[in-house]
Amino acid sequence: MHTYATPYNIVRNLQPELPVYCFRPERVTASARWFVEKFPAQAFYAVKANPAPHVLDALWEGGVRSFDAASEKEIQLIHGRFPGARIAFLHPVKPRHAIKRAYENYGVRIFVTDTVAELNKILEATGHARDLTILVRIAVSCDGSALPLANKFGAGPEEAAEILRLARRHADEVGVSFHVGSQAMKPSAWAQAMADASRIIIDAGVTVDIVDVGGGFPAIYADTAPPEMDDYVAMVMRSFENMFVLENAELWCEPGRALAAEAESLLVRVDLAKGNTLYINDGSYGSLYDAVHERWEFPIRAIPGDGRKMGRMVEYTVYGPTCDSTDKLAETVWLPAGMTEGDYIEFGNIGAYGRAMATRFNGFGEAETLAVQDAPWPSLYGAASAEVVAFGSKATN
Ligand SMILES: *Cc1c(COP(=O)(O)O)cnc(C)c1O
Image (cartoon, rainbow, N blue to C red):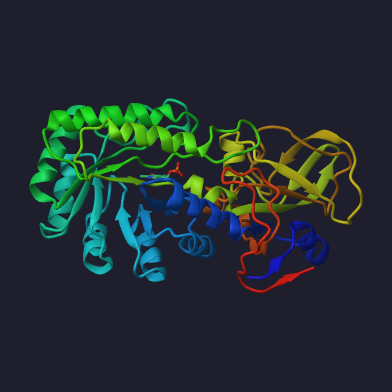
């Protein structure tokens, strides 16, 4: 992958026609190292947040060795790239044949369930293997989460206790897991979920080897800054001490967004300005899904196509490239006056659920990826170091 000093250099040298993902490998290794060094939990990266090979490689570089896969394709991707990785199949509903192949062909031993039926499916599809780790996903409150996940998955207290007892009989290791919802703005969500989990374990009357506190750890965007990541760790550690689990029980987590968000920004081109309405070359069917459907406010900056000095800020309406009228940023955006065809806008911290969401609707969705060395966007992992991690070729001016 070619490396440029900054997105300004990309604009100056290439005037790119397609949207460009600006990859910042150093930001990924920084988030990965933070989880490895500061969070005393085994981090399973949730592959769905950003499955791009260069992002996976940078996470590996930062010390991530465990992966949360939701599908057979994700398992194949990780197994092919990192034969030594530990892969957990953590979708609560899995096709029977996918469980079988995960176990037999890809060495997967960790599975999640939130029903007795799915537990039986796992046991049958693996030929009643004796070396399984079964996590029981419990339903928890998603208080304070931007994207709650509680309704679709998770067993209620009584069913969870029953599944735990059954799993204990058949599995080598047993754990509890939950997901407090994505972009969880309140560390207290974990305290509550872990207290609920502890009560279920006591009711079940079983020993538990693993407590998996899921994903949901935040990223920083333009609107409201989340609490410090250290606050989340402190809350999880305090709650873990109070749980009714074995002295040597392991703590796991499944961060997706928190590990991937700062990995990439997106550089889009203005294809037309109609007064203060801009038409850009990515939108709700591309990487800006969350900016439209979740009203997410990504940090942005304008980059002039011709290097001119830009003026005072005014409000714009911004449309994506497809013919669908809902392909429009939910909020008006502030950009310099006089934005015109051939200018660019960079959306920061779009590494999580950005490229992963892009479709090919209307023939759009194609993009380039280039590495950059600047670090202009807010970070939850300290300022970027001046030292540049060499990925691919050297920077050109
Ligand atoms: C999506 C998902 C994650 C990652 O969630 P983030 O909010 O991105 O951290 C982790 N675990 C499971 C089971 C998920 O579905």
